[in-house]
Amino acid sequence: MSETLVTGGSGFLGSHLCDALLARGHGVLCVDNFYTGQRDNIKHLLGHVDFELMRHDVVFPLYVEVDRVFNLACPASPIHYQLDPVQTIKTSVLGAINLLGLAKRLGVPILQASTSEVYGDPEVHPQSETYWGSVNPIGPRSCYDEGKRCAETLFFDYHRQNKVAIKVMRIFNTYGPRMTPDDGRVVSNFIVQALRGEPITIYGTGSQTRSFCYVDDLIGGMLSFMDSPRELTGPVNFGNPFECSMLELAERVVRLAGSKSQLEFRPLPQDDPMQRCPDISVAETELGWQPKVTLEDGLKETIAWFRHRLDV
Ligand code: NAD
Ligand code: UDP
Image (cartoon, rainbow, N blue to C red):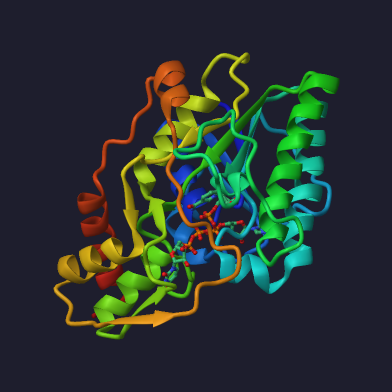
């Protein structure tokens, strides 16, 4: 049986990845420092004979024996990654160095959970992998954006210099069950506010856009990318090209939750990207991957999960 290391495995995406790997018969070593991860996300796996949990910060070297590595460790919500920006950049950069060193020593493939944030506030729309991005190097989002950009550089340098087999996945906004109610990202914020009958907080005018991918689609893409031929290093965009404004998202969530919440406008955070939509033609052509879950269906699932979680 193969042994797979998942860093950030108790987080939102990581815990779904652990589930999917175990369901496919792989052993999983979940490494997490519980910065944003929740024990609740993996508690159903704790008794599983093929699942092992290790509390560890990827900023420090890790000596384990595994057959492949998924590197997801890093807070993803702007609120959380801006709380301790130095730790965020250490997690991305030192974490990448430590895990690439591990993959090099073991001669195993490693996948990096990179992000659409490498495109910054893009001047090109939709964003394809050939676009180099427009990122502020000294702003409040830079610890995340530049940390992830530097991690991508490290992945390609280890690949060229040390022949490490790499998979660089640029993930666009993904949502679904197991986001925490206080995560701060827009989908969870709007759903929690709608279910509690609180005002829906729109930052700026709400005309900025994002493209939201349901978690099951994303995890399917992650697994098929890891299983793809060694030559396919990426970067490859993964996301749902259906683009919508934050106002449209708010109206949809309020309707689907059957809520009476009103909209409340707040200042737009600095460097908040105005538009974001993935060009997924590489994932389509090279992997035959396409998201299947519509925003309407994904939101229904997520709202139902939060309703249960919040007991409202
Ligand atoms: P999350 O915050 O729920 O999960 C991140 C996990 O990493 C948490 O369990 C956290 O405790 C752990 N972690 C953080 N720092 C660590 C460290 N130094 N050592 C060990 N563990 C650490 O976020 P998520 O949405 O599940 O994102 C997972 C990965 O995917 C992240 O790398 C993120 O940048 C990337 N990503 C996510 C999205 C998205 O929309 N969800 C989009 C782009 C990229
Ligand atoms: N946003 C919002 N209200 C909220 C949280 C976020 O209007 O309560 C906006 C935010 O300004 C951004 C978009 O929603 O334009 C997506 O924000 P999120 O933090 O989810 O992700 P990111 O900005 O990293 O794409």
